[in-house]
Image (cartoon, rainbow, N blue to C red; front, side, top):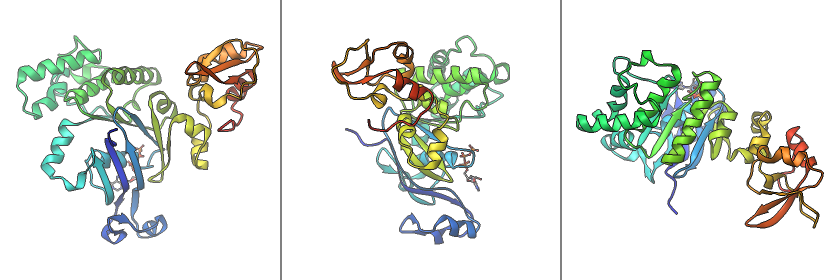
Amino acid sequence: MSGPVLACRGVAKLYGSGLARFVKNGRLSADPERLAADGVTAAVRDVDLEIFRGETFVIMGLSGSGKSTLVRCLSGLIEPTAGEVLFEGRDLSKISERELIQIRRLQMGMVFQNFALLPHLTVLGNVAFPLGIQGRPKAERDKRAREMIALVGLGGREGRFPRELSGGQQQRVGIARSLAVGPDVWFLDEPFSALDPLIRREMQDEVLRLQGMLKKTIVFITHDFDEAVRLADRVAIMKDGRIEQIGTAEELVLAPATDYVRSFTREAPRAKILTARSVMRPADGEDFAGHVPAGARIAAFAHDVEASQKPFAVVEDDKVIGAIDRLAMIDVLVGRELKAAR
Ligand SMILES: Nc1ncnc2c1ncn2[C@@H]1O[C@H](COP(=O)(O)OP(=O)(O)OP(=O)(O)O)[C@@H](O)[C@H]1O
């Protein structure tokens, strides 16, 4: 098995003056009270994480919790005050500036909330832009840009300028541009926050569709738990620069590590998050009305189970591993506390 694509070890990013006095042996050595008393902002602190190939890793938190700063550290845009960021096992602070630029240009793609398109360039010009920076010949970059434009559903609009496109279309251009160089890691920093809810959902579907085809390693920032649930393999919840918990949406809902995570996930759409496995009870040789796969989300079968007098079998590898009945459905749907490991 290969190691993580990206990893953080004790990463901290401070803003203020005389920061060296807060770092000992490469690690942050001051607590938040001391930093605050000295007028220092700890935008990020004590962050340890690993992101694996092909994973969609979502970083969530309220405004000011440190999401963007952490992602800037992960993408090598800024250097942490303490700790290490490893990209494919290499400490980003130990490689040359030149190589870092190459990694950022060739192996990382970025999508931003404000689209960050160049207004004087057409759709084709914008998408081809990063290929031009790489010095690729014009014919080659135009061909690749056209492919990317078609991929995001904007074929035929190559000659338009950003101002002639809707917000959703502009962000599709941003997406096409970020994918043009074929990056290994795809960073999306609140890419859909400026879009209205319907378009936002459409764009989430677009990311899911592209991810199904391209299988990138994705680091996605959002402050919306529903968005995280739709997209994420794992979610990291940040508060005051620290990560409170990392887990699947189901783990966060069933076993919140802190009160903060509990309050963050309280309103979560449980039926879309929880699986049959986490709400089943032991089966005791009863008669079943049907069966559901252990990994299926409640929303997919809630209606059938609720409408049935008899329980349903929960199956895995063709074996019955538990049972699920109306009462369990009602517990989930009304949000009654579940025991994490029944
Ligand atoms: N260049 C900077 N100089 C000083 N303080 C900064 C700087 N960048 C970020 N901060 C502070 O660090 C903290 C975290 O900011 P950051 O932008 O990472 O949060 P965020 O979670 O991405 O917020 P938002 O969702 O609003 O974008 C904030 O208190 C912010 O004011």
